[in-house]
Length: 186
Image (cartoon, rainbow, N blue to C red; front, side, top):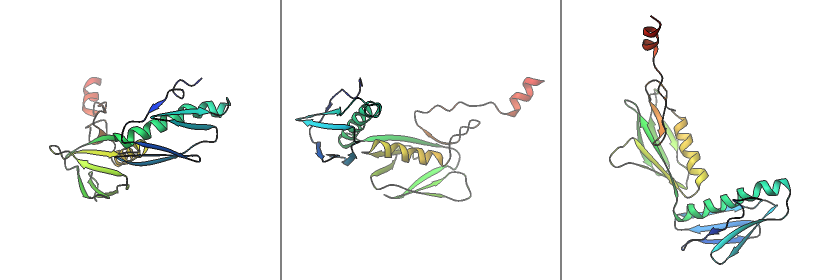
């Protein structure tokens, strides 16, 4: 029995959910998302509530029941509120420059600047006060997380000085350098 799959998803005002054949279309103020249903799952739209049911009790159907409900709930929340990830760039000379809606230029201590192409449904903005904080926003939760991870991957935080790109809520454990271990051994 799936606890998550049995919960219903409320549709807020301003969001429309449609089911055409085996494709769920969700449209709202932040954008439009679609999801192709798996063969073991059906979706019922009753007024302002969406419920997810499984056709049988096979292992695959039980496994995908909660998954489908969570994906539909994320789509509804994404088109109404949107998702956001914040990255912080730490290091001397490390900086970001938004060239256009589709291009982010990063200087991360390499001999050349890095040009990162921003996907079409994603918005990247810098903080007003601190230009080293990037905000990645979008309606698709998976895509927002993927873009944030790809930007972080360009220069992950290193444990000795803490330089690199990290999530604003991420804690990087710092290591002690060579000098401290030499004094401890003496």
